[in-house]
Image (cartoon, rainbow, N blue to C red; front, side, top):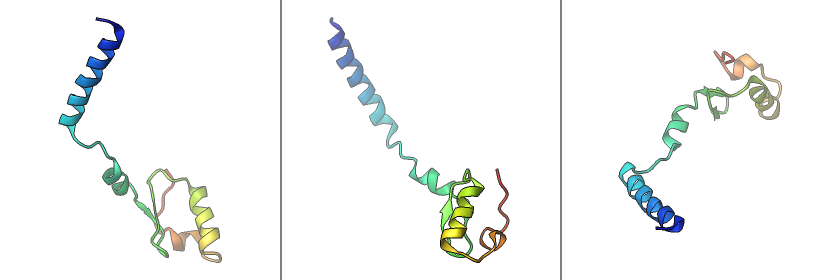
Length: 77
């Protein structure tokens, strides 16, 4: 048996294993991880967002507002 046949049989074996596992989408987990929310426009971010990105949102979308008004209770990670 040559290397080409070994690779093909391994692909077939892996394809069967992947069918058993089902879909591997992380969309639901990503939506659940969006815990930082702007209280003015209700846009959400992942928990790992940096404060600088939130400050840019504040400057671009809500000029003149305070950071605490937009992100009540935000604690930098």
